[in-house]
Length: 289
Image (cartoon, rainbow, N blue to C red; front, top):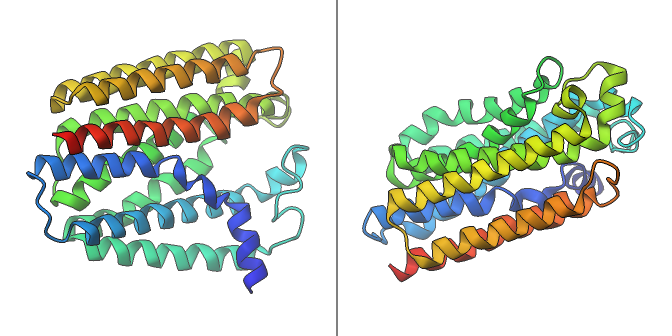
């Protein structure tokens, strides 16, 4: 059992929870700031937000692996993933999904009534993403929105209601995620064409897809600037945007239409830095206020 749990965590790349979690925590801190830094139950709410984030991502990733097992088995890049390679069974994966779904709904219930009511929708959106590559090239944006709802959800967890201003951060995370997912999907360009799966690279070619990715990341930076303006944030938040800009520029330098050899560095390493460094700058700005 412990071996299968370890393999399942490997399958869903559990360590990559870091991608969206810092943005969710940023949303929570902005809500806390807007609530005049009220400390009542603060650590309790932040703790349950982390549980919700980890649980939702675990459900979504495991569901994606189960749904795509047959596709993965025919893709040279993914045929050694845990389910097509026979390291795990679909039955065990479904049990893993059910367990984390229960944890997510329980954690949402502990936060507030609105979180509990929205919990099924919060799970349905990222699970729906797994189907989208079968019928639309906009699947990257659906994935982006699946992560983008995290800061808005964290705001609701902290305040019990939604504030329109936080949707700038939802938009920023959506565009950021869609942009780097397009880069990652470039390595499946030939397979997508062969099998009829939909993606931006399959529709526009690798060179065109990389330009679309750049445009989405520019859109992310614009949304962050609007967020700074909406919340009247200070110089550390602006410095955070500058740092993110530099990291994204470097990410796009790592990948060329004729050279995809450094996609892993662009996807995993650089985007991990983006989320963590963004959080450090913005959390500092919030605490300095």
